[in-house]
Image 1 (cartoon, rainbow, N blue to C red):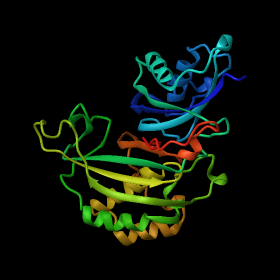
Image 2: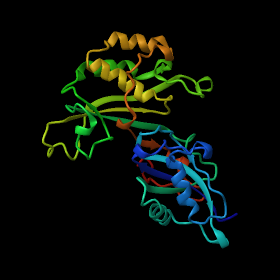
Image 3: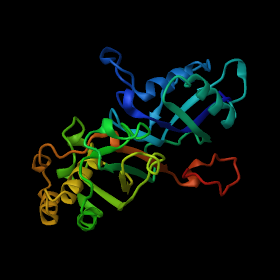
Image 4: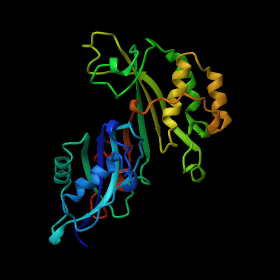
Length: 297
């Protein structure tokens, strides 16, 4: 077992055609999850062991990622030494070339490292495009990669005032959707970053119609089910004048999932998981000298 290695991989995907990131049970298989394709790619490396990924951050169908993470153990046949990190990345990407999934880099990590529980923070960015009455009228480079609103402007100043209410540690029960984990997870979460900034697009200076992009960024150690999309929906409602700052405060203080207004949740396709951060010390294997390498990419 001396050639058994645990790897942490950082991977990206366009979530449009996948059922979400996690593996889909065989009896429910309509379309696969990103994890299904990653595990298939790893199995094509012909390891001795049956590989199972532990994904750090669950994303729903239609949600994208520029950097999600997962760990897995891999033992090569015939007592061959573990793959180097670069070779592993190249090999996996060669087997993923027909999918909208790519591994950006990998790290060999200690045998007790866990991608989910060792994560120090996660960052989500939600993209909004203004001035398109329907997503099919958006530039092709951004279609299904942002929420297209027919509004030509939002009251960003008031949205920022409302977003400051969400920052910090709160009971976010009103901003989580009902799911099977509700009874087992605390609704108290801490938002370290909530920001609303102008965004951009490759097509923006070239498109025949002016489209303004905005990005809503949220950073915290963990999030509740659909919490980010529900927060975005409420903030956009504030920007459109459909919800006041005081109403958003009342919604937060209600601490009640059912208090969230119907039809307000932002669609999945505008959401990106952009970072999962770890302590460098958690990534270091015992016999490795400490390195200042950046683990946050």
